[in-house]
Image (cartoon, rainbow, N blue to C red):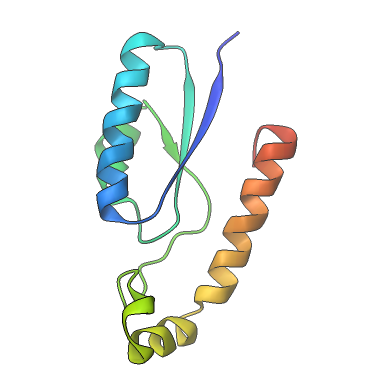
Length: 105
């Protein structure tokens, strides 16, 4: 039976790091079923591997006005709040909980 893994990443830099980890895991365990949930942004770094069928991006994703740096300025925070960051975070949190309980979103 193939294992399953949910990978969370928190922005473009972490997407790139997670992508390297996923590539290494798949070299050693090609049957591993991998889902990725980019918490910040669209997770575009995963696109080529998703198109190749090596992983799938799941869950709600959105590029926010601050680019994930809402803690750097009040203006960035307010822009992200206006763009729905609280609702997005809530939906992502619920998906991770479901995955943890059932093994799939």
